[in-house]
Length: 380
Image (cartoon, rainbow, N blue to C red; front, top):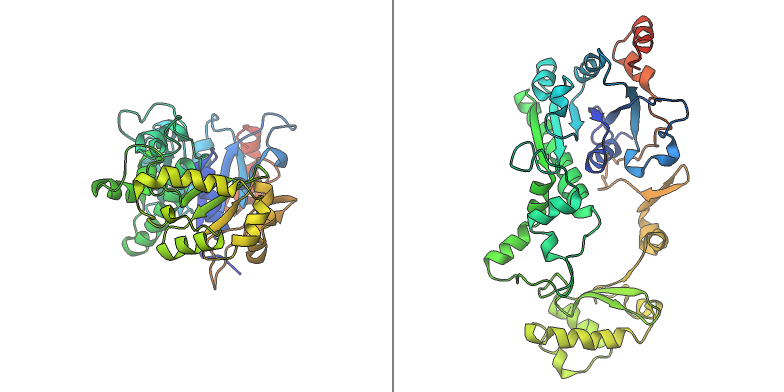
């Protein structure tokens, strides 16, 4: 059964991190994503399947030498029948290639042109290098993460690249596609990871405005400051996560753990949080993670074991929901979210750069003679 984006064609300029994640999300939902990759210089290239990542799944791959005259014209031929273009280069690169938004939209006025950068298309930092950690640093998000007695803790690159970048761009693309159905016009999406991360942090800015958020790390409800919301070490060196915010869930946690210390009764006495956290630390370290799971997992105490990636694959909840799937021996997350009538489907990884070049170009109307000329010119 076709996914909800069946019939949408996407031209993706190969990149790293958030751009490919956005392309994966669209491909998982049924879009035909054609990835323009660099042409391998030798037969034994670095573009083999083992060096690809899960975020490359579901594409068809076209390999071009974009430095060759005529390569940009070839991409424009693909753009003419596409709904979306995704690029993640520094500002100005696509323009220098002859594939800037003005040119592409002149060839296809309905095109949604998605631009993925760290700092955005304009601004004092727009032309400087950076990575996820830098983009989330200026959003305010990184400064709120971690413990007070050490530097902020980077949250992998989930908050910036993937959440504030790839997911925000995918959302923007779907919004623009819906709008184009009414207007008949495409548009350019300027998706900056620094913007997107700030958007993800909107609740905390709201709490700050109400003076409900301290500037000190690990001093707040959701940053590990509250004794009833955080992680604790167990006797076996593994960890558990507690999130018993609501009073009824907090009472259940105390009851199941057989905690009758009267100091725990005033849950929201912030001055007592450090001492209560230390008391909980001493309680949870007495038993193994499995023992705490046997007591608390599946209850309303808001409990979960802290698992590594290997352990997550085997968790019964994930197994029951088929949260993870196996494609070509690679365990990976299944498409999300889930649809009742038009479910998404994860495709395979392209085996090599350019695996689908002839197929895609033939579909775009290139004749065998044109393909031969492109090969002779070294473009494909």
